Image 1 (tube, one colour):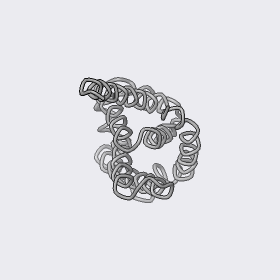
Image 2: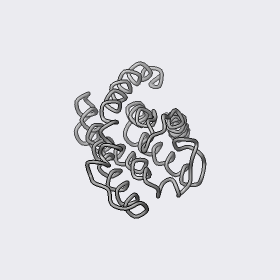
Image 3: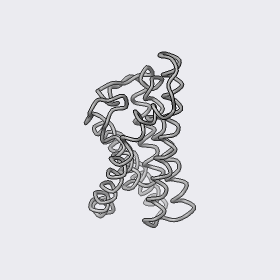
Image 4: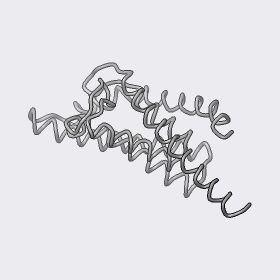
Length: 188
């Protein structure tokens, strides 16, 4: 291959990466709109984050998640309930949205250093989800107590974590199944 062909291939690869990242961010937004409102809304957002990471890989998937968060921060209505803006990010549920970045970073680092086996991917996503829960819960408590008064940890866990554990694990399994079905199409 000539240097011109190599440069063209590299440019095409970068464009393809940008397209995949944009589609990944859009998918997370669309899945966040599928929502059952509660203190922390039940959405398909978590499924989309898992799916995008599994399908696009750690780096592109994490960047897609970052793009999603930044789009919401600018005010675009990409968060649950067609909301957006810094008010949402700095509100009670904002820590869970920011926590999705931790899922991506943990997944990216784990698959980079430990390989891409099913066990590594699953463990990385579960660990990332646990960190997301922890970060989001601390954030929720801080904002809630600042605005509404004292609240206990078990109460917040009952509102924000316990009801989501089983559904999120089911979303994780679904993300593995769907990504495996779509992966051959993306590879070609």
